Length: 83
Length: 201
Image (cartoon, rainbow over all chains, first blue to last red):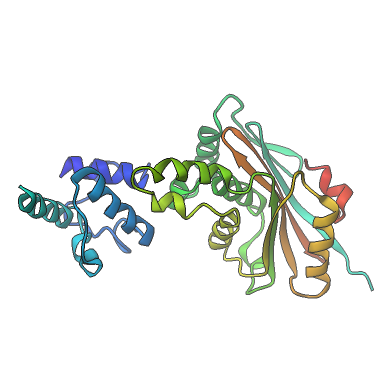
């Protein structure tokens, strides 16, 4: 999950934030890291770019991108599907 | 009767220097445009994480507005729809356009795409300072002070606005320049006219 946090920081240009500042279960949007809708699109790009995973159903977004842990779980489950 | 319209605050951001009302307030002359704007942002002491995500033009305009308005209490000017923003530049959003174009060959970046219009800088300043009035952005070869005076004067004389941030914000690669002026009705300051505007460039 540390690598994923680094990728999120890089992709979203969160220059003042370190990986250890982001809790595994901390909400990423609104009350957590304060990400917005453009950041959500960037996270979709991140999944595609680094993990070759496409978020097929847009309505899954809030659940998938809730926290670093939920993103990691989504990556693991979909990488397994690709294997 | 011709109303008194004055420039009550003016800032220039150019070649590693920020000058506010004729006084040098920040300097980092050897830095690249990106590094300079980042240092200037940190120097403001503001906690505004969205700054990092902005393109160069928005960072430039945001920084200039921050210094322009820093001595103004929020209540003194930003009320409902009475403050507007009118800006111009030479290179439109070309810097962001080029960066976005580089991503198109792989996966286009949504974060870069949202900055591919020059008037986004007006939006960023408006969000930061809760400005909701009339706004416009013009592309010109060079700052047309006569045009700017006429345009802003019409907005103020017709009571569309009581105050207006106007000026120039241009950013391309490492070349950047912003000159913003706060123009207000019935306030003491420097007379608002084309000649006086040009003294800040």
